[in-house]
Length: 161
Image (cartoon, rainbow, N blue to C red; front, top):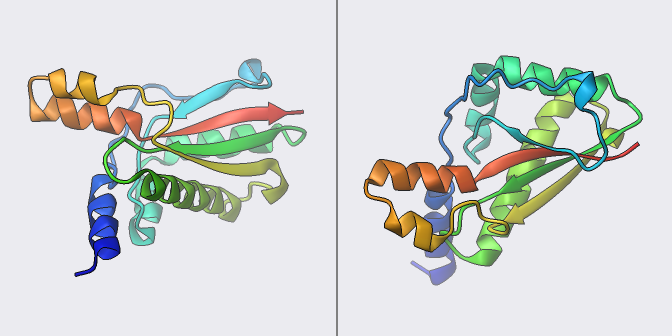
């Protein structure tokens, strides 16, 4: 096997995000609209197209909240940003995050969000919430996995009016 293929496989498995849904009363409302406000989306998805629809359906209330919020504010531009954890090569992490941002934006567009209101940004492993030192200091594998998942996140940022 060649080195690029191996890195791709390692990266793919490193960045398969759980389909966990945080039932944290995630809601975007009119009072919270401010330029440069950033909202963390409370679910993760696989980077494989076949599962994306399923993940969004499992998190329908949150996705509907996002769609409704964007559609209620047609004068705003929204960035769909995706971060990865630090495992894998930097360049691969960046590509994975860009593809995930594209997938999420595409899904929103198929549900009626105006394309002109969306910008996408893959951040790769920049701006980690949990660095390698912190993760390595955690006791259980479950804690470490959750810390990696916290790094891999989707954000919605209000860019401008």
